[in-house]
Length: 115
Image 1 (cartoon, helix red, strand yellow):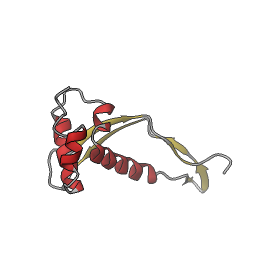
Image 2 (cartoon, one colour):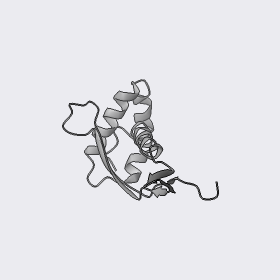
Image 3 (cartoon, one colour):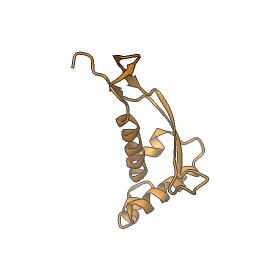
Image 4 (spheres, helix red, strand yellow):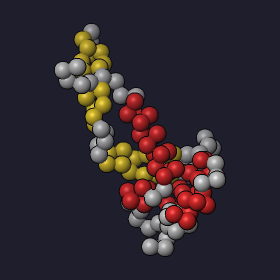
């Protein structure tokens, strides 16, 4: 597979190790956009981009409350985001996202029954 050799692989990790993390993210996102039908393994080969996506997912999951009030009563909720479409932009003015992915799975967040 030669389509990702510029960023992934051992030789590329040596080349990108001296780069700023944000520059590595940019380069890895650029290389991912050149892949046709990229999948999760393509992201796994790009550690800086994978870490960015994990930080975004952690932030989304961290905003999920364990409870909410409705007409004076507190209810408890457990939430699992089974599918998320995520676009990450490098600056507020960027019309095109740096990376645009669809995630599947997800961890349960919010209320923990019995706790």
